[in-house]
Image 1 (cartoon, one colour):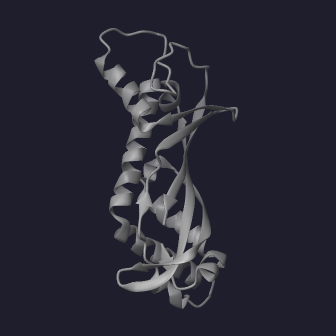
Image 2: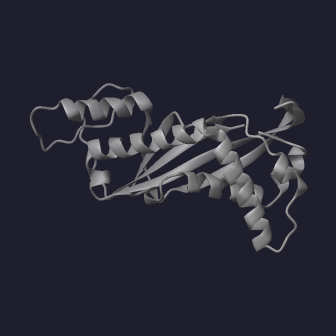
Image 3: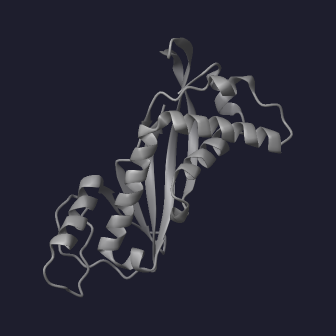
Length: 200
Protein backbone atom coordinates (compact mmCIF):
# COMPACT_ATOMS: atom_id res chain seq x y z
CA UNK A 1 0.00 0.00 0.00
CA UNK A 2 1.36 3.45 -0.83
CA UNK A 3 0.63 6.66 1.06
CA UNK A 4 2.23 10.13 0.98
CA UNK A 5 3.77 9.84 4.48
CA UNK A 6 4.10 6.30 5.83
CA UNK A 7 5.04 7.26 9.40
CA UNK A 8 2.15 9.70 9.73
CA UNK A 9 -0.27 7.20 8.18
CA UNK A 10 0.64 4.33 10.54
CA UNK A 11 0.72 6.62 13.59
CA UNK A 12 -2.78 7.99 12.98
CA UNK A 13 -5.24 6.50 15.49
CA UNK A 14 -7.84 6.02 12.76
CA UNK A 15 -5.71 3.90 10.41
CA UNK A 16 -5.79 0.45 12.01
CA UNK A 17 -9.39 0.63 13.34
CA UNK A 18 -10.56 1.75 9.89
CA UNK A 19 -8.68 -1.08 8.22
CA UNK A 20 -10.27 -3.56 10.64
CA UNK A 21 -13.71 -2.12 9.95
CA UNK A 22 -13.26 -2.30 6.18
CA UNK A 23 -11.98 -5.88 6.31
CA UNK A 24 -14.79 -7.00 8.61
CA UNK A 25 -17.34 -5.28 6.39
CA UNK A 26 -16.00 -7.20 3.40
CA UNK A 27 -16.73 -10.55 5.07
CA UNK A 28 -20.20 -12.10 5.38
CA UNK A 29 -22.10 -10.63 8.31
CA UNK A 30 -23.01 -14.14 9.44
CA UNK A 31 -19.34 -14.96 10.05
CA UNK A 32 -19.25 -12.70 13.13
CA UNK A 33 -15.58 -12.13 12.41
CA UNK A 34 -13.24 -10.01 14.48
CA UNK A 35 -10.29 -8.36 12.75
CA UNK A 36 -7.06 -7.04 14.25
CA UNK A 37 -4.19 -5.49 12.33
CA UNK A 38 -0.83 -3.80 12.56
CA UNK A 39 0.41 -1.12 10.17
CA UNK A 40 4.16 -1.22 9.51
CA UNK A 41 6.32 1.28 7.63
CA UNK A 42 8.28 -0.54 4.93
CA UNK A 43 11.08 2.00 4.84
CA UNK A 44 11.04 2.46 1.09
CA UNK A 45 9.28 4.26 -1.72
CA UNK A 46 7.47 2.74 -4.66
CA UNK A 47 5.78 3.86 -7.83
CA UNK A 48 2.09 3.01 -8.07
CA UNK A 49 -0.24 4.06 -10.88
CA UNK A 50 2.31 6.58 -12.09
CA UNK A 51 2.74 8.38 -8.75
CA UNK A 52 5.41 8.00 -6.09
CA UNK A 53 4.57 7.30 -2.46
CA UNK A 54 5.91 5.66 0.68
CA UNK A 55 5.17 2.03 1.29
CA UNK A 56 3.37 0.44 4.25
CA UNK A 57 2.23 -3.11 5.00
CA UNK A 58 -0.63 -4.41 7.14
CA UNK A 59 -0.36 -7.73 8.94
CA UNK A 60 -3.88 -8.77 9.89
CA UNK A 61 -5.68 -11.59 11.67
CA UNK A 62 -9.31 -12.60 11.19
CA UNK A 63 -10.83 -14.40 14.19
CA UNK A 64 -13.96 -16.50 13.70
CA UNK A 65 -15.60 -18.65 16.37
CA UNK A 66 -17.37 -21.86 15.43
CA UNK A 67 -20.08 -23.17 17.75
CA UNK A 68 -22.60 -26.00 17.70
CA UNK A 69 -22.37 -28.42 14.79
CA UNK A 70 -19.75 -26.26 13.07
CA UNK A 71 -17.40 -26.90 16.00
CA UNK A 72 -18.09 -30.57 16.79
CA UNK A 73 -18.47 -31.92 13.25
CA UNK A 74 -15.15 -32.05 11.41
CA UNK A 75 -16.60 -31.82 7.91
CA UNK A 76 -18.80 -28.87 8.92
CA UNK A 77 -15.77 -27.16 10.45
CA UNK A 78 -13.74 -27.69 7.30
CA UNK A 79 -16.49 -26.39 5.02
CA UNK A 80 -16.87 -23.28 7.19
CA UNK A 81 -13.11 -22.70 7.01
CA UNK A 82 -13.10 -23.17 3.25
CA UNK A 83 -16.00 -20.76 2.78
CA UNK A 84 -14.22 -18.04 4.74
CA UNK A 85 -10.95 -18.61 2.89
CA UNK A 86 -12.88 -18.23 -0.36
CA UNK A 87 -14.25 -14.91 0.90
CA UNK A 88 -10.74 -13.61 1.67
CA UNK A 89 -9.69 -14.58 -1.85
CA UNK A 90 -12.58 -12.53 -3.25
CA UNK A 91 -11.43 -9.53 -1.21
CA UNK A 92 -7.92 -9.94 -2.64
CA UNK A 93 -9.30 -9.98 -6.17
CA UNK A 94 -11.36 -6.83 -5.54
CA UNK A 95 -8.59 -4.67 -4.08
CA UNK A 96 -9.96 -1.43 -5.54
CA UNK A 97 -13.30 -1.98 -3.82
CA UNK A 98 -11.49 -2.67 -0.54
CA UNK A 99 -9.40 0.45 -1.05
CA UNK A 100 -12.58 2.51 -1.41
CA UNK A 101 -14.10 0.91 1.70
CA UNK A 102 -10.91 1.60 3.67
CA UNK A 103 -10.86 5.28 2.68
CA UNK A 104 -14.57 5.61 3.47
CA UNK A 105 -14.00 4.08 6.92
CA UNK A 106 -11.25 6.60 7.72
CA UNK A 107 -13.46 9.51 6.63
CA UNK A 108 -16.38 8.19 8.70
CA UNK A 109 -14.23 7.77 11.81
CA UNK A 110 -12.79 11.26 11.42
CA UNK A 111 -16.30 12.73 11.16
CA UNK A 112 -17.48 10.75 14.20
CA UNK A 113 -14.52 12.08 16.20
CA UNK A 114 -15.18 15.62 15.01
CA UNK A 115 -11.77 15.70 13.32
CA UNK A 116 -10.70 16.97 9.93
CA UNK A 117 -10.36 14.21 7.34
CA UNK A 118 -6.62 13.81 6.62
CA UNK A 119 -5.51 15.05 3.21
CA UNK A 120 -3.70 11.79 2.54
CA UNK A 121 -6.87 9.70 2.58
CA UNK A 122 -7.61 10.23 -1.10
CA UNK A 123 -4.02 9.26 -1.98
CA UNK A 124 -4.09 5.74 -0.52
CA UNK A 125 -3.33 3.08 -3.13
CA UNK A 126 -3.68 -0.63 -2.31
CA UNK A 127 -1.11 -2.49 -4.38
CA UNK A 128 -1.79 -6.06 -3.27
CA UNK A 129 -3.87 -8.12 -0.84
CA UNK A 130 -2.68 -11.61 0.08
CA UNK A 131 -5.34 -13.91 1.61
CA UNK A 132 -4.35 -16.23 4.47
CA UNK A 133 -2.81 -19.55 3.47
CA UNK A 134 -3.12 -21.25 6.87
CA UNK A 135 -5.63 -21.35 9.71
CA UNK A 136 -4.80 -21.89 13.37
CA UNK A 137 -7.51 -23.65 15.39
CA UNK A 138 -7.96 -23.00 19.12
CA UNK A 139 -10.38 -25.00 21.26
CA UNK A 140 -12.85 -23.61 23.78
CA UNK A 141 -10.28 -23.81 26.58
CA UNK A 142 -7.83 -21.63 24.66
CA UNK A 143 -5.45 -24.44 23.63
CA UNK A 144 -4.17 -24.30 20.06
CA UNK A 145 -4.94 -27.63 18.42
CA UNK A 146 -3.41 -27.46 14.98
CA UNK A 147 -2.59 -25.23 12.02
CA UNK A 148 -4.13 -26.21 8.69
CA UNK A 149 -3.32 -25.42 5.09
CA UNK A 150 -5.92 -24.93 2.37
CA UNK A 151 -4.97 -28.34 0.98
CA UNK A 152 -5.58 -30.08 4.32
CA UNK A 153 -9.00 -28.46 4.64
CA UNK A 154 -9.95 -29.50 1.12
CA UNK A 155 -8.87 -33.08 1.89
CA UNK A 156 -11.22 -33.26 4.90
CA UNK A 157 -14.11 -32.03 2.76
CA UNK A 158 -13.30 -34.49 -0.03
CA UNK A 159 -13.02 -37.38 2.42
CA UNK A 160 -16.43 -36.52 3.88
CA UNK A 161 -18.03 -36.30 0.43
CA UNK A 162 -16.51 -39.62 -0.64
CA UNK A 163 -17.45 -41.50 2.51
CA UNK A 164 -19.88 -44.34 1.81
CA UNK A 165 -20.60 -45.37 5.39
CA UNK A 166 -21.28 -43.34 8.53
CA UNK A 167 -19.18 -43.57 11.66
CA UNK A 168 -19.33 -42.16 15.16
CA UNK A 169 -15.59 -41.44 15.14
CA UNK A 170 -14.90 -37.93 13.81
CA UNK A 171 -12.35 -37.39 11.07
CA UNK A 172 -9.35 -35.53 12.46
CA UNK A 173 -8.38 -32.44 10.53
CA UNK A 174 -4.82 -33.33 9.44
CA UNK A 175 -1.99 -30.88 10.00
CA UNK A 176 0.18 -32.46 7.34
CA UNK A 177 -2.55 -33.55 4.93
CA UNK A 178 -2.37 -37.17 6.16
CA UNK A 179 -5.23 -38.68 8.18
CA UNK A 180 -3.63 -39.95 11.39
CA UNK A 181 -6.82 -41.57 12.67
CA UNK A 182 -6.71 -39.76 15.99
CA UNK A 183 -9.93 -38.77 17.75
CA UNK A 184 -10.34 -35.07 18.40
CA UNK A 185 -11.00 -33.99 22.01
CA UNK A 186 -14.57 -32.98 22.88
CA UNK A 187 -15.04 -29.23 22.47
CA UNK A 188 -17.83 -26.70 22.63
CA UNK A 189 -16.38 -24.15 20.24
CA UNK A 190 -13.44 -23.45 17.97
CA UNK A 191 -11.66 -20.17 17.32
CA UNK A 192 -10.23 -19.93 13.82
CA UNK A 193 -7.31 -17.56 13.38
CA UNK A 194 -6.79 -16.56 9.76
CA UNK A 195 -3.41 -15.08 10.52
CA UNK A 196 -0.15 -13.92 8.94
CA UNK A 197 -2.07 -12.41 6.04
CA UNK A 198 -0.57 -9.47 4.22
CA UNK A 199 -1.77 -6.30 2.57
CA UNK A 200 0.69 -3.98 0.96
